Length: 428
Image (tube, rainbow, N blue to C red):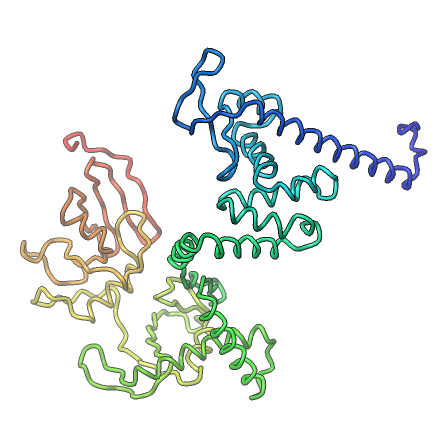
């Protein structure tokens, strides 16, 4: 048959491809048989790390399959991997899976040798059973051998999990405890459209409860006339559930006077308006998110059901009115955080509202409690400035020159951090 003439039909090509696939399967089975025989010829009876004399040189046995499988010669394994043309790690793993099947999954191995189970499926199963004890591996082998080609991988993984629970309950509990330590619930930074992405890992029961609560709330929103899609209503429902929880916080106090100014539950909004000379201004800023947002987004937030709005006096960010005390009043703290937005250490992005406010010139050395001498520093960099040789000076409000312990200079501005490419030879 001349494959170069283009005269071969599609049906003939498919037949050839099928023949090649079958031949490849037979070759892989032969390779398995030869590797198993090789392993039998190269068993070492001492554990890895212990040495034995083989053919006048010191060798060790390495465990490349699960408990109960033989240890094989480390040096012989290097030769086999080289012959297979695989990388050291990849070759070791491949040979280990074959030994896993031959010694610990004999029923599955027999199915592979008979051509009833594809090699790649058996390799996947061997990867799952490798960490199991001998009893658990035998349980998986017995229940899976004849069905591995007909069941989903999710079912296979559940069978392996069942074997761990049945034969290694202490290990299963330890794994469960470790997994629980990775639970989290996070919100991303706000994006250009005033949205955040929610991600998390929850206890299954907690996750089911949350899903059902959101589903009920989304259904209710639809019944009340919300024409949004189900996905959009579910996202709104999550926010509604959060605001409902805020009913526990019944009293809202003025931060400066302590006076109760509201007794309503729900979303609390503090609106800081940056006044410009542009009457058509359409951009606001969400301070917590450190990002610009549209006026329409702000209106939507403020008009949400059960929202409590606190309106504060306009703050002149360029103002410089000192106070006599060391303590920093909330008015000055807000002015400084609104001016600088983030920690002012080089390249730090910690939001200013979560930072300490530092006296650039210490108050005890005559430094004023005044916006021109106050700088937001996160706790880590505040400690570095106080207890190490990191120093800075205020060139102008919002403009800072830093010097590192080794004399490297940095200029921190509203546009970011810039290296001054300077090293003080007197500092080491």
